[in-house]
Amino acid sequence: MKKILIIISSFFITLEVLADQPKDWQLGFQNPASDGMRDIVNFHNNLLLPIIIAISVFVLFLMLYACVRFRASANPNPSKRTHNVTVEILWTLIPCLILIVMAVPSFKILYKQDTIPKADLTIKAIGYQWYWGYEYPDENIIFDSYMVEEKDLRADQPRLLAVDNEVVVPVGKVIKVLITANDVLHAWALPSFGVKRDAVPGRINETWFKAEKEGTYYGQCSELCGIKHAFMPITVKVVSEEDYQEWLSEARIKFAKEEIENDKLKLASK
Ligand SMILES: [Cu+2]
Image 1 (cartoon, rainbow, N blue to C red):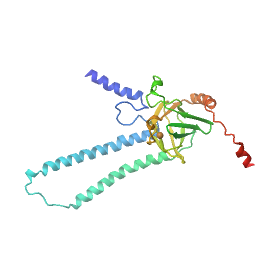
Image 2: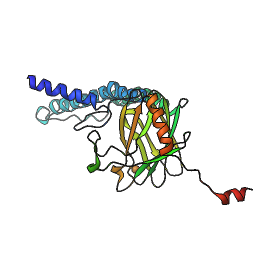
Image 3: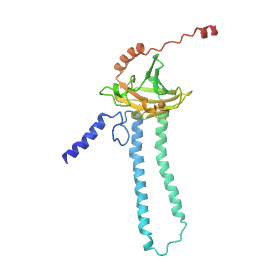
Image 4: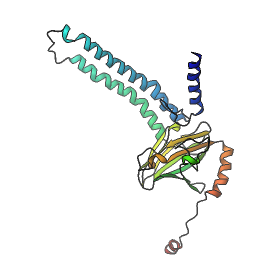
């Protein structure tokens, strides 16, 4: 008994530690690390799940009841009834009401995701076959982010999720993400922040998140984009403001975006 308790509690403890990435045999969502994701998890756990369970139990009960109550052996002369107005009105109205009850909070969350507050930092994510490119437009930073091959993984890096150049953002700041693609459809998704947006060539989608705690968060491309779709993960490192500034000063040199010198264009404009 004690052993079982230890196993169960260790399961919950590991869940807590690896809050920001998927784990073996996981059920349900990753732990939320932003307000938006907390809303989504609450909506799912406290409203959708109870409704789904109640409906399933009710339908199961109806089926069992009908099987027993109207079985052939107890009803030698079967009923010929085809209509019942009351029942028909009820089974139309009640599902409508259930849908409304689900729709109202759902739209609330949707609109909250859609309204981007004043951004402290803007980053641009560009999907390529098969890696992500990132830009910090205000800092003149540009870099590519490739998955780390299994043989090159460090001990602390999860398989198929770690990348060579992580996106680094400060904690507690509104991060606006501009998302686009260069070749085919991709999707930039980060479950802990409740973020998922299609990356469409020739179009820029926007989303935002505000990370509440420092840590490393993992996501994956979420739009089937070709043979290596599974191998273009997303890694976002949330750090303190000081660490972010430190990273910035290094990144400004390491990932400096070269100004395009186009003399022909200059001549033409003269
Ligand atoms: Cu992709």
